[in-house]
Amino acid sequence: FAEIGVGRAVLELLSYRVPNPLYLPKGNLFGHPLDSPVNLPPWLSEKDADYYATQFQITGITGALNYYRNFDRNWELSAPWWKSQIKVPVKFAMGDLDLVYTMPGMKDYIHNGGFKRDVPFLEEALVINGVSHWIHQEIPDQINQLLFDFFSKFH
Image (cartoon, rainbow, N blue to C red; front, top):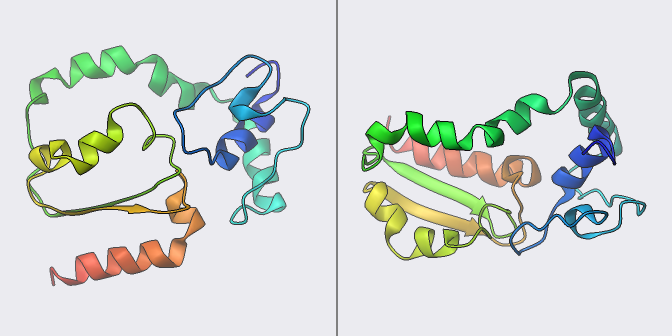
């Protein structure tokens, strides 16, 4: 990210809406040339984008990247729970443009039994069309309603 700056990298990531696995070729980060303007999604105002970019320029992006740098160690630390199931009621929602959803094997896992095997009380795995990784910011009213409806069943 040094070659483009942290602020630009944050804007690129927040704006990423490609329904394919993430591909980051040198000089063409997130699918378009580095000298082209970033087209912000409708849910992200210029003011908010500037705020995020400024904050990351001040603090850096090391903390966020350390999660990914530590991936192997996280697997080692969580090894005792490898075959554990999540046994609480769950409703899952993500966007079909989420770069996690487009990772190899993820759609199969979610829709063809793997997710339900690991989360036996999964009520629904909802994939919302036209929404990316920042689902709670893109469609906040719909997500709030989903949460309200889900939790209302338990009172």
